[in-house]
Image (cartoon, rainbow, N blue to C red; front, side, top):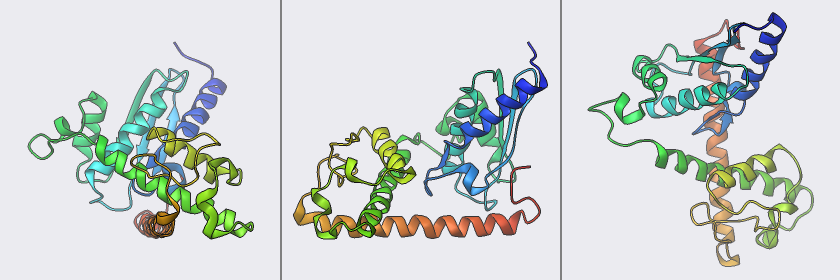
Length: 237
């Protein structure tokens, strides 16, 4: 079945929006914001074509596999998309990753003899770091608004300022099955979900700040390397 060009354009826009929900697992930022999506289009017969690129030829294949697989799932879920062709380009493991994602064979099977485990625990570890970094972002906003940094441990998630940072933190906590309602503690252990006690809050907040600054430094470095690698195509084509 084919659709009109206007309808195809609408589906393409929806596919691009869906890619905006896919994050670099380490940097915890959308692939679209990082410039990793070089092409996204949907034909009138419903075939989505997505091309991804990374800052270097040697980016870790496990990270790359997660991004390609997540991009495939996000675009495949868009109404009107009938087939999905997502490919990573200019990467030393692109062939294995693209084939594995297309065949839904998993990471270990895509790298037989080189990988033995799937990536669930790796993904969870990155989500825990995203919770820490996200907590620091909302806490910094609260302190800037006048909150006492010594009493952040007494606050609930609902006390954080409304906005993207708060909702991203809520979503990361939800993905890990951590407490994420407004009446749950602002500071929670990213592994157990337990409320952080007053005795441990200072160390917890220092760890959260260190995690955030590390993520932001890595994201800046990746953007710079991507720009150097693709100087003529800084945005999606």
